[in-house]
Length: 221
Image (cartoon, rainbow, N blue to C red; front, side):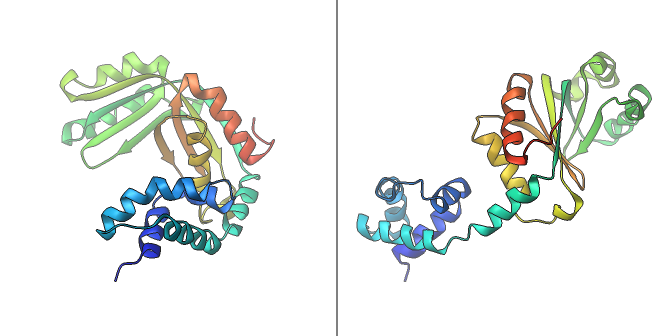
């Protein structure tokens, strides 16, 4: 039999931001109970009393472990932050022709000289990130019917994580949370082993940098 406690736990586990707020005791249990009450009743297919939901929330709160979050924050203080502006993004359909055309980009952009060229392949699309100064040249490589979308006015915010922290649970979550709580929209995310690169709008650069700086400490540059 499905209980109020089971349903409330499942609902809260699907809300990671809310889960952390509960762990820090900054949530009004009564208000939260009223907020999720319709969903609880819908899943249980019967009325649910507010005191029962509040009790389930309290039990869920008591079961939370805050240590992993604190450990992640501590390890992120060893990270470095780098910002680069003047970036554009172009996404094209993925087929045999465009895969071949992408190879030509390495003749236009030289990453060894500090230029940016990131190519990410999905199942049906290829997304390319590069410096705005190469936009015209890169765009000429593809036909108009191959282009899905072009986005200008972007910046990259790169967080270099110590290699020993790569497998730490919650590292990416903490970074995304810091940006989301500051209303920074993430256009793209690109990762290597020790680098998490967030592509954001240039207008959000200062806010994003400050948000991540507060998380990792004072070692950014």
